[in-house]
Image 1: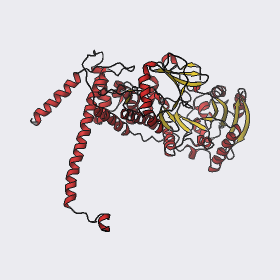
Image 2 (image 1 turned 135 degrees about the horizontal axis):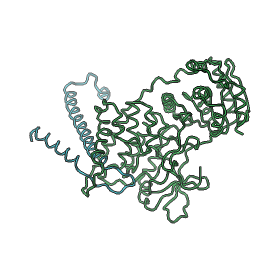
Image 3 (image 1 turned 30 degrees about the vertical axis):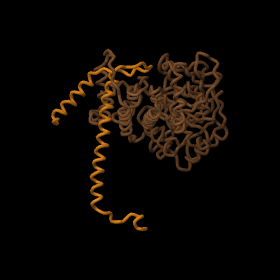
Image 4 (image 1 turned 45 degrees about the vertical axis):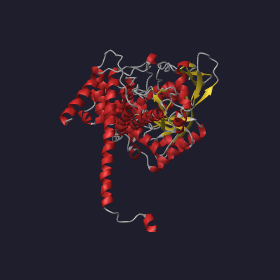
Length: 83
Length: 454
């Protein structure tokens, strides 16, 4: 899938979510239809952002880890000193 | 407190609060049995009480077969309302609510409301007082209290931080929190570029408008637990990201710029302390408390104190000190004495007025009389009647016209206060109070009085 097609699809999904109406179960507090719908969208966005952040951190750690392996530490760890 | 069902206890059908033989109780209806049992058996109740996020309760024998259970929650000494809190107090209450919801989800439950009125300050920290706020979490179900959280906490906090701290008073008008379209229209454009405020307030408000009066279909959309937790984290970081530095407080340098030398100030503190020793009150309402210096003379004696001030910066500074020093006996609150919190809500009985929450054992009115009688033209008789309504004992300071603070008040206006002198002050107060002790503050022209209402 090209980047253009992927962007179009995500926009379409976001627009579809805007017009979707969720089922509201019984509760003494009226959650409000608009509040319910926007909650779904914001929560999806927030979840995506957290996943993206976690993925980015893992990638960052992976490359930083590779760099660390290449450059040996200047001071050997305590355990090595004792041996 | 009046016997019978509490006026504010009618919205949630899970139960109600009532007073019997002077004991505050919470009745639980059979319809809430499943949720209450889960609260207790899931470990959520224990976890919340351990973290001091929920008031603990004890079960009481129940003879009414129409009720599932009756519990007796630990009673709080004073109920305060969000429009009486400083910025950091409302922010801490918001963060505590989210913490409660996070813990609830970990135990298979969820908050079914997020009302700021369900949070109270005990031992200097926010605590949930509504034990029946939880329901079994149904996987996939969005947070039913999301809108309420935004209206009760996020919108007023954003307005206070980004527009003007005095906008907390909007909560006095809107009993169910600030309408989001109002918050959205009042907030500056810069809040549109903050992802949290843009989504939870601006976009949220647009969505409410777009879907107003729309019919609910049977189609079902779900929210994964991960997405719900992400939403809560987004709310938490948005609230945590709001800050208010506190303007230059109106009274910041008050103690430095008054007629008081360091010695006179110490003398005044000693006199107040001796009055406390003599009267031994259980609690003190310190009116016009500034940063709470004199309230702390009471708390050092183990006496609970409420420190009221009209200046949001002073209340904010005082609360930050309470948190920093883990003080448990002092509660700072925002109050305009010339327009105190009225009774509000349905039947004007949901939220109590300032005076209805009294009377206090003792009232401090230190360096206050000139603000009431000269700045606000209140006759001594009227001031005395007000103090008689709200307290049994009174520690009041008379500030004569020759005092530089009074001269400052008179500098920009005509002196129409021919009646403002110490003998008339004593005569007016003597009608309603017995003057137990009179002590001049050495090094000043001021006088401190200890009085008891007749």
